[in-house]
Image 1: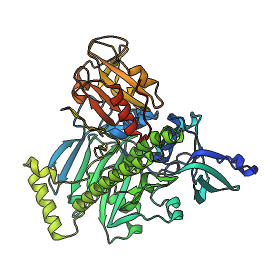
Image 2 (image 1 turned 90 degrees about the vertical axis):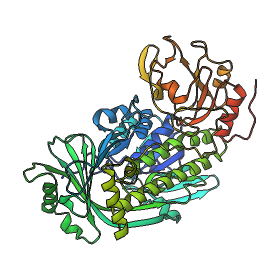
Image 3 (image 1 turned 120 degrees about the vertical axis):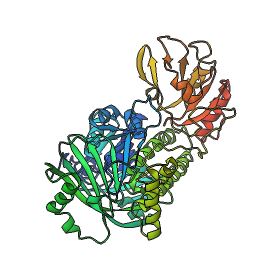
Image 4 (image 1 turned 60 degrees about the horizontal axis):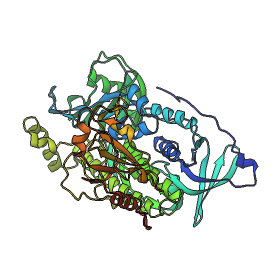
Length: 553
């Protein structure tokens, strides 16, 4: 079995020897992928922050492995996307098997639209992702991790939050304007404050076995219902880097955990699945049950919850870490505006509203997948098996088959920050949608559209006369909340963005003169057929919940 991959030294905090109590704008509790990404996102927005973690190492075992296209786009803005793409196993295709048949019931493609930088998913062990994030934090001037710093008490006042921290050399206190709890499903911060975490625990056990082997299976997600090697249960096969494969076996509820975790019994299951002569080495094995839970609110004045601390789902569909990283993307720019006095504190309520809705959607999809995979009644099993039989021949039945609705980008179409289209727009997006990538040429070099937007509000203008930005674009750039304008050229000019395949125009329904406004997290705010300076300023004010009027000159 793989042991500890890498450890990080405890560094004595200066506060242990000082009577002065230091203050940071933001303290983040938890140095998992979500907590570290939160720190880097705030760093990109110019906000100093401290990450506290009670451990001193990256995760043991591969744990989360499936990183969605949307999360890869987010991680790209944090400096890790291309490393994840280069190291990870890329895949878009999945296959569903049923019973004794060796041929799949059907296959599916998670990436419905081509011509994007990132695939539908990349499989990559969690410890690699954590190491990449740590590398970026080491280069950061505004984010730092304090290892073996355990939060033992939290006190919130109108002025901020005071955190008491235990270390190997004693306790000390830190003050902050905002505390972000990214401390996982058993969140000590949540428990200290006595907040509810409602939901249910599913009565089933699953065995994860990560093994190293040479195998000729394609880089696809294979899922079995009622296979001969695990009769009456389910199983999953997925490839990871380094010739590591994730095997997942449903075990049922009434099991002997100690017996099932014996290597000889795990080996028996693996050989029944993949062949008696298989040569392999164990990387990691674990038995888990799972829960679907969620806090009613994620924002509690100056304490904000993200990731598994706020919402917890089953692993089916890879909605856990992917959902948590979308929390990060939603919160960072809003908190930065509030801390810089460019938006009222009420903007943080939109994080609560948008991500609570997203979490409910993830919990619902996760619960439905669990109910389909593990039917608990005769009627449910008959429905499941009938859907699988029909899915062999009939497209409509495949909508009912649920081996885990895979994580996709959240569409915030109910957000109060949107300005709904006033004209008859087509294309692939609506206000609240995350931008879709497209190949473009920038200054004569091939690139990707999503590399041009993010971090700040951005307007995308489809030029009517080649390369000229609309009148008033420079004024937007000089506003308190600046809006960068990107001109989409109609020709082969070298000093601007060229939509050389016409894909961006199609996805945004970008007729000449169209202006599309995006939030810093790349979600579409509004679209207009003709640029209107005051309309754009009003949309920015609405998207940041401004109560004051903006200069119209």
